[in-house]
Image (tube, rainbow, N blue to C red; front, side, top):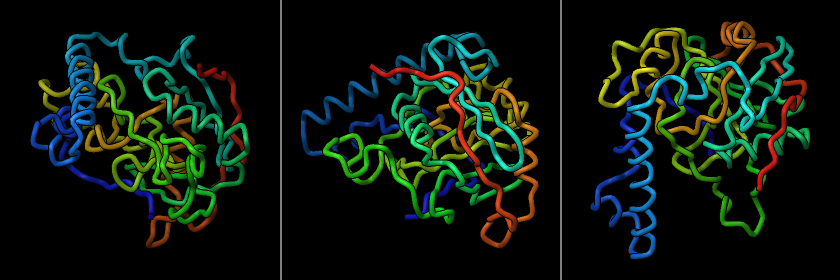
Length: 263
């Protein structure tokens, strides 16, 4: 299935998108154990959301260009220039482990940005180069992380699709494989955001751009800390009717500047 991200105008509430209602839980499972697990997860997310709403800017790792001790860092060496990105393994461990492992194995080397929409995002990570391919590091293994469909979305109220955010592309909930995108939109969306839904520091950050309509639907796992001029250059390239650049823009390699060791 083609893994894409859709451009929408409406923002999505964290708690609503995660299915808080008892009705949603009953629709999704007939197992009391699964219902209990889902309820616990929703309760934990609700607690995180409440904490995020009361937090200052220092609680949101995307708002700092410093690479913290609990973060990783990579450089995408592209045919258009270098993009330096810090990763957030404590908030999105599956996505970060998947990305770092693929990078170490050279999975992304010579892979193109196959979908580019100026003032929206640039998308890559598909070895087939057409948006239909790519898989996670767990695909085909006896591990229930993936189950052949992709690994789970990791949604947190501490990470958002701000301008420069690195996120996983998917074909629906919990279908993450290898494809990713970098949010590039420059438009100020802050005036459209509800202060009862978005923390004040994030509303302020959205003045610089981003895609709040994608929040809660796509895993954010990194943030560009230098090289947004390269991202903008890629976004502005000429594309065909399928949003594919008419001249290939390639990820030559991914350099791991600071690794993270998972337990």
